[in-house]
Length: 233
Image (tube, rainbow, N blue to C red; front, side, top):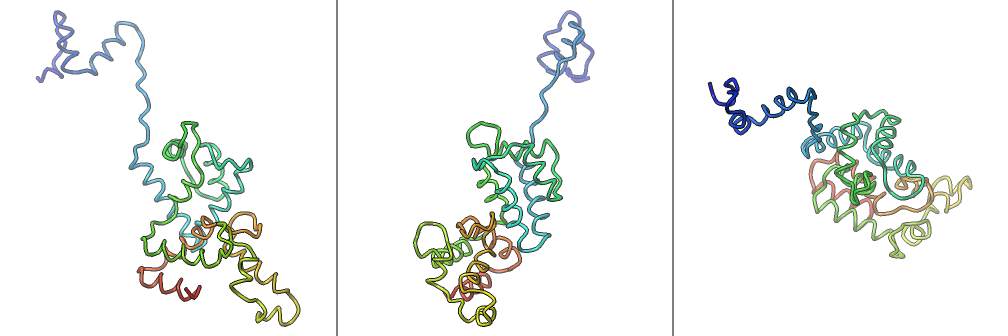
């Protein structure tokens, strides 16, 4: 028999331990009457990646706004505004959305995006990772569209920014007197405002919106042409 499988020799206990480390665990258990507890294996990077793929697929199965909806929900869940969630909050939040995540999976995700050792994940980093991967060409055209809207250059698009780029005067409800031009622009902005419809759209919210759209467009050429045409870049 190989040394690791051979019965232990009373006169050579250390030889067995050298060849078969697990034997020292069982031997220790026999000597002390206690069973040594081995640490629970932590989810590997591959396991966390698989969990993220599963979450992304569940979001995208809800249509182009699935990622945007999840981002909006978690930003609202972050009541203290510190942009952090622990594993319990992550699981409860996903459960409310009908997305299942086991406790070990949630802890693995939190560890991956824990930037300061606090045991909580960085919400924006997590949401950025959850978006379907986009090529540099797609990211660039999205950034260009946002920059065109953000006339003030402060990183936030508001109705005032839109007013300088688009006119709502031709909208049927403005013509009929049902809405004002500002209401038209505000409702237009709400399409991208994934937080609390506060009339302000950040680049992250704009990217959340287009990440779902991007996932349904096969080629970079099609996506770039679509965004370029929509925003007259």
